[in-house]
Image (tube, rainbow, N blue to C red):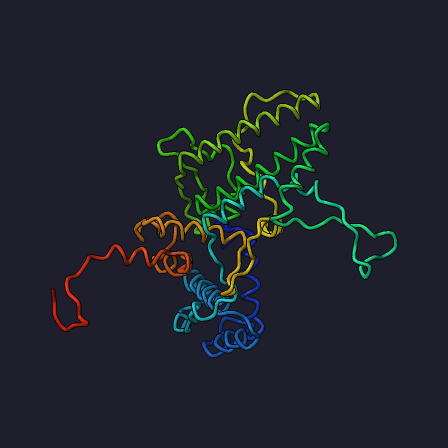
Length: 362
């Protein structure tokens, strides 16, 4: 049934894995009781799994039994009464939003790091790490060594124009991927699904069309984008077309007049999280802060939500921008309270008369 509804194969695989946990305790629908399901869910917590994992198993079981009732395989089921767990009290990975300064540093490093990687300084390995002929290695990129590494890379590739252009293109794409994630709130998979035909850059306001198969809620959406980001994307498509034409000419193929509608806007690698970790280190941005909150690719969506709140966007508008089902999700999970300017907000409160220290109002 889920395949018929064209749900994502990954989601179907997860549901199958979850249902098999219940099937191990009850081989038939008649044997699947409230007590049996409760024992399975309790076992997840006993095994150290999170409240979110518990709730996902519960939701999958209820959806499965709803389907069984609707298809005549069962008359009713009691599983809606299974208690859920409060995920806010048991979040294994809490993400943090990046500040505006950190975002600026991250975008610059992302754009230049391919060159910096090529220009990393060669240093001697510590004696304890020397094995065989491996006595030299490349020094890691740090905020203090980054600019010099970029210049060394550019100098080393000055006569290899094609390689230099390829490195610059790779860095430009990664920086634009980060910027698009931060300014739209799109998830990584949603961004990777975008094709040229999904962009409406000449519309007022510009937007991108997110198809139901790529949207997490499976409803699809039209996601508005800012004018400056639309200009960046338009220039990026021009670059993509120039690259496609150069490749076709080099291969002797027909030179395309335009990019096809199904051409991906970005080639988002599955291991982009690894590139982000290296970019963070080179930019001097800690992966984990003093509260234990981490930065990963999805944290860029958290940054989007936090920036909306800091900019004074009404909560209901922020909820719509993030395409959340509830306002609680937007305000509590995707807004980093540390970055909100609470002190400045208090200054906006009205000035009330009087001084209570003296016991009199003036």
